[in-house]
Image 1 (cartoon, rainbow, N blue to C red):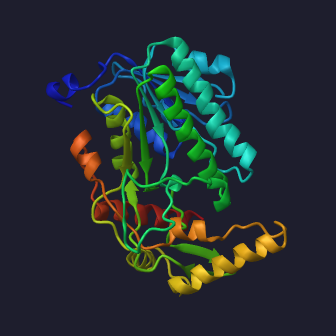
Image 2: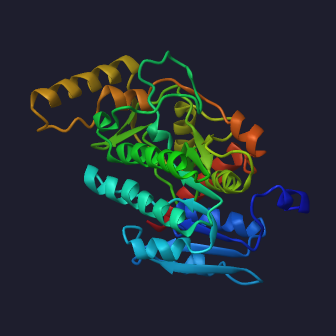
Length: 354
């Protein structure tokens, strides 16, 4: 980072930057990105049960990477985490919870606690909330329509049957509420599909594995991929750049592959497996029937597959990173071709050690 870049930031390199969820897949990349940009006081909040060895190893050479173990459900832990923090990058969220109450508690309630602590501390110059493409709805949009930051989010996220979507939507609402009520400087970033070594699963936007057969549902759809290092750089820039208060930024890379291209490359570079392409009309019809049967059975069969989810994941959609580039000066350092090569190499390595 040159001196001009440093002077363009809202904070200096000796200010405290708090990263929640720092030991996670994206969190580790965010901490490394901050170090690469010259920041010397990085506070990493990790769960008491999480391993922080890799994060701790980043400390040294004139920089302090502080490990703070805590739970964002604890008001005391939130107060400790936000003490003197000039920028807060909030990545911690409930991801594995299938229960709506658990997801809400570990995403929305924890975010409110953290925001309360920031308001009380009074030193936070920017709160970056890391959201997700999961909050967007494509319902009612034309085929192939562009999805950008102006698009609608789910108004009834509970209908989709995804606890993560519900919790993330509520989390974004809370962040907007605190900006309006307390004048807190907030920015929301919404990554697409973040991939790379450390997150090797095939995204559900491509399809679903079931009973030894992979159902390919994406077809010609573009996958909104962002390589983890590119995503981390965009998140950090959202915490540093002036004159973006209240903005939302989508994070996707350039040259996005289609679902069909991705699946073909995966089979060629990692492993072969049986797959069956399900045409759009068929998959939509099946989601409709599943939805109706769930209603008829009064929820005995959960509405895991429904038209709202189909529109979000499998409707033909195009994506843009134009706002991210223009407003933050971001460019993806890792091309999609190189990112996929790294991803496939990591997949092969995992397969060898399995």
